[in-house]
Amino acid sequence: MTTVNVVKKRGIRVHPRLMFHIDYWMLLAFAGLVIIGLLTVYSTTFDLGRQWHDGDAGYFVRRQLFALVLGLAGFVAVFIFDYHLLRKLSIVIFIIAILGLIATLLVGVESLGAKRGLMGGSIQPSELAKLATIIYIAHWLSSKGDRIKGVTYGLIPFSIIVGVVCGLIVRQPDLSTAVLIAAVSFTLFFIAGADLKQFVLAIVIGGAVFAMLVFVFPHAQARVEAYRIALENPMAAGYQVEQTLAAVANGGIWGVGPGASTQKFIPLPAAHTDGAFAILAEEYGLVGALSTMSLMAILVWRGLKTAGSARDGYGFLLAVGITCWLGFQTLLNIAVITAVIPVTGIPLPFISYGGSAFAMSIVGAGVLLNVSRDSSIMIRPQPKPSSSR
Image (tube, rainbow, N blue to C red; front, side):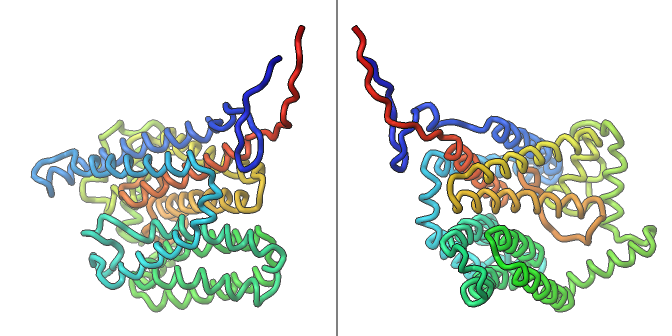
């Protein structure tokens, strides 16, 4: 008599090898982005380490490596467990994120007129809020079904949930992160089946609120005004825009070589954070920039494919949300670097320096791989024992 060994996952009998199935396209794209990011962080920070930390050229990259270790720990944790556990914990995770945002406003470290970090600025709760909001919103929407088409069950409570998160982040102030979270959340709202009229109404109201906030915060108004002037007269573009475009232009096709950028030495502000892609383009040229964008495009492609094959609504919305988060944030950052939109202060996922953003992007990739693994498990009937003589 011969038998086939099987294991159970949420009541479904599957082959053990499928329990650890990995989307290698997604994994390789993720690994490539992490490697490029670490190289870019070292290139953009070794001089800063020498100047600010007693000649320690590796100071910042070691901090990024520490964030990598924490991120990989979270990556493994969310990958080995059934992602439906996140659904059960979604309210707790969301509340922790909200409390972190409140704590930031109360006791956060102030830098350049904004309170965005805790523990000396090393932890930014707004980065946790990105993933936490997606996890909770995916659960909330998938549990409502067609009821989200109604204003009282759909648009109003949904807007309150998103409004609380974005309002706390705007208070820091961090308008760009709030806009990103709102964009991802309302994309999920629409995809989940919201009435088109509600979606249009939400866009109109959200656009009006954003326009009002731009005029409330002087720094945002200044950025928009600088962008308007640059559109009318490119020669009058702001200093940061000029230096960013100069870095990209210096790179040409093949780049000036690893570590050979000149713009990172003072001319380009925040070269290791918001401007990391510009330095990458300067050192590795158009080829390096397009290669990095291609890796992110692969990650987005596999993320959307994962969403399409998810076996329940929660997995579908979770995968779409994380994919949109990473994709939208990448588009915003590169649009700023290429002067397509006003300066926003959004880092490039996996590439820019910043421990909280780096670690949470890695955890997000882990969740995507988990949903992908789950959707690849083939439902198999219990094999019937066969006898042999």
